[in-house]
Image 1: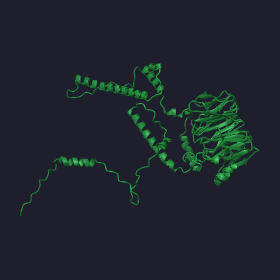
Image 2: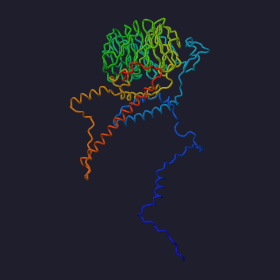
Image 3: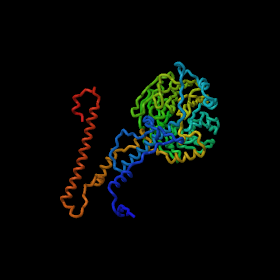
Image 4: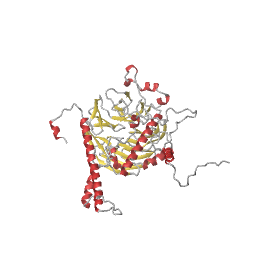
Length: 561
């Protein structure tokens, strides 16, 4: 039998051949291509991956301004900033995607063949809309206890009304279910819901009283006496009161303490409103000025001369951009609150407006005697056009209170004959945030929301003109503190320590090698500084080149640095 030749077997510990090892490594390092997504039927998805989001849509939800260059912080701080930016970008993208699920759209009113919408009556609007919307227009004939002031809750579901002759009531105005009704046997100046519809603040003739939704008196705040106007700051849990004695008082309703009592030194205070954007209180005075107040400062933040006569009404839109004022000079003006505080538009009214109110989408309502005029702009956060009114309505009595209902195209008007609920298409936001202001929440959900809101309460000391400044670093104060610390200690504790090379063994730590390593590090630092200065010079040259070509050179340019 012939002997068979066999190949020699490799040793157990022998290294593998180079060619085979390289091919194996290449195969292990290669990434697997993702398999195309297929549906249940087996067809390939023509558009794999998440849907792209338009940049304009995502920009609405972004809060971090990436146009501002960040300083060069430490590596740990830089990592946190980058993580915050990535999280913010992901959140804005998710919010932009979920915007497609918002089925409701804002309403509008459009006339036929150039018809003036101001001539359309409320009866025509009620006849044209559906039954559910038509039920939101009603009149309460309460001439016996008028004139009336009114206030809607933050969810827009409940309505509180107070008559000058002591009538106080709260109701679910959608279902017309009465929650409570009492007569306090005293003149009522103003009424406000607190953080929820379960608590009511009533400014009576002498003191401030707090009631629950059953009409039971819970508190009598005697330190707030002779109150004329009320405003509630929901994110700070502060109740601001303006009195006949000229004092602006802030009451913290979560602990029942007075945070600040500021003397405006301008006589009787009867005109007050709040800026929903930064929680600053606006006061109108008899000398034609409007002052802006914060509980953290004893003097007004800003004083504006708005009218030649006394200021009758003040209103601020939801974005904090525009402020509307009216005075005894029959002027209606709109001011810019973005730092300039200059008038943007003005209109002379045949009869001065005694009450003003902005809607969630920027509509401006003015009450002049027994007439309501409403002006609209091009969209949300746009300047209302005062040339032609959007809607006009005549009431059965003189106006004493105005407020747009949140998340409903409804304007509530309190007058000497009772309460009127007007339909104003396009006034409110069509979609609400169910976690913040849910009109359909249960009692348990309201209690859980109250606990969460108390945990997230903003301190009163943080109220300022620009709330974005709280997230910025005060560089000037930091530099001053650093200089004072250096003077006190005699040295800079944050200064970078000089480079000290580590000792090496086997004769490599000679004096010459140490000097050589020190010089190498110093040269590298010098190169970095030179590189930074060159980059700054190149940026300056590019900016000079991008200047407008039409600008002629001046002889004074030689002195420019």
